[in-house]
Image (cartoon, rainbow, N blue to C red):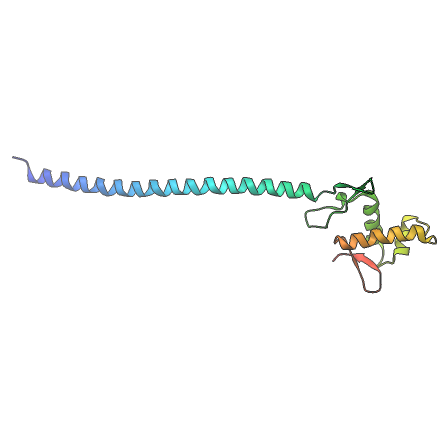
Length: 151
């Protein structure tokens, strides 16, 4: 005949092991679910990094064609885009506006750049570049026609 005390201890131990197995199965399921979530997060991060790299690359100035001539397009100003993305003459214009004591007229920028502002044919292209910088968010144009840096 079997010892009832020993049989009770075996039954109790079996119950403990069944409970432990249930806890471990639950933990294993949680670990697997978290691993799956991490794999998804990793794929999303990779895609976002690729998209960000593509956006940064596309934010750089792109040479275009106008009238059969190669021209440099002026990119829109963004927080991650630096002035070095602009062609050199636009960088000089920005520097001249920035170095001024306050808002400046196109003539003052021309003087600072050494352009003969008495000749309208030389001043108007400069004014066009200033307006283009305003349109792209690099400069701000005041109601009185003066130009200043963005705040």
